[in-house]
Length: 386
Image: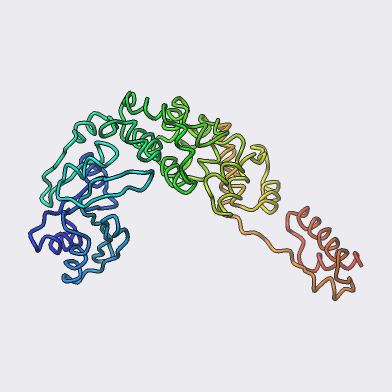
């Protein structure tokens, strides 16, 4: 609230006498003393007015969602989403036909949960139309209005309910909200893979992803979102062991099968899909393996794959010896075979399958030496292949 860039934006947008308030997550997080990363603002002014006022104050703007009332204002390289107050005219999935309004309560009513429908004046005075502050203090995540209707408006709210309860909930989840999620679980199938992926990965990096996933299973949501997600205990142990959350690794920890189906459903990038498939099924990494064996497998499978699988093995077994795999993977620098195809040709081996076979046999010997054979020794082996 007091950051210079924030005050610049507020000063610019209130020059015409309009009311501008902090909105949503930033207010919620401030109330429980969490750091607010994204600062959103709301105002009755139309987007065109917001852009004009910001430009007159020397601030950059981007029409990031202007059709729905949202403009990004940039001050000192920090971005603020400024959204005109809206009321829903018609809702259909993610999108809604909206009308701009000057009614703050109507704007709050279109938000998903009471704890997200909070506003604060620039001086910090709270505006709470649906009891969100009390719910936040009590640890209750509750839909605004009829829970089933809010879910039918946008099924992604089911996943958001579990994510927010895992982060802010205290005790049992709100019964009406949970029942609505259970009743409408099948609606999740109508969501795009991109939207599910975005929400699911945010859930998995939260402080209690295993708790959220268990609730999803009990509500019949998990099997719709992630078929084959049965390893909740392994996920819970990984959360304890890993130094920082890695959403894809946590997803891999959760799956026992169907990684290919999950990757396709979530529309993962080729790189992320490959990484997930390399964790499911996991590699067998013996905790008894010595340094030589660890180096051999690091060369064969690459460090990133070994690291992921070692974390999963640690979470699966609790055997701290798997940390040796992790440590080796972190400092691994892949050695390069000292000889290549040009060397083979100079020694009289013609290009083709025979050359590839010869190099593979030399490489096998080099690996068996624990990468100790130097270029001269490898050339000697290669010469004997001719």
